[in-house]
Image (tube, rainbow, N blue to C red):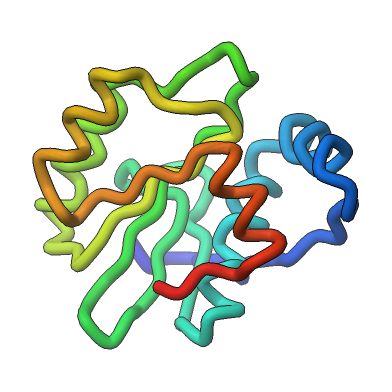
Length: 142
C-alpha cells in the first residue's frame, strides 16, 4: 500500500464559493486526490497519495496517533451521487487494512442507502461537496 506513494499537493483554489465548487468539479481526478490528501497533511499527519493503479481500493492514507486513516476520493459530477456499493466496498477495505478511520470524499453527495451503510460503523466518515467547501474555510481536525 505504501509502494511509490506521492506527496499530497495543496492546489491554489478560488476564494469565492461557487468558483471553488466549479474548480473542484473540473479538477483532474488524480489532482483531486492529491488536493484532498493535503488537508490531512496540513493537519500535521504523515499523509500520502497511493499510485494511480494497484492502490488496493484507496486513494490516500494518513498516519494518525490512533492508527491508519484511509481515504477514497470521488470527483463526481453533482448529479452522480456516491452509492451504497462504493461505501460497502470501502468498509471492506477499512476492515482489511485495520484502519482507525476511513473518509470518502466527493464533489457530489451520497445516496440515502450509502449514508445508511456508513452509519452502521463509527469508522467511516462521508465528506460531500458542502463539507469539502467548508474544509477550505475551516480546516478539519482529524
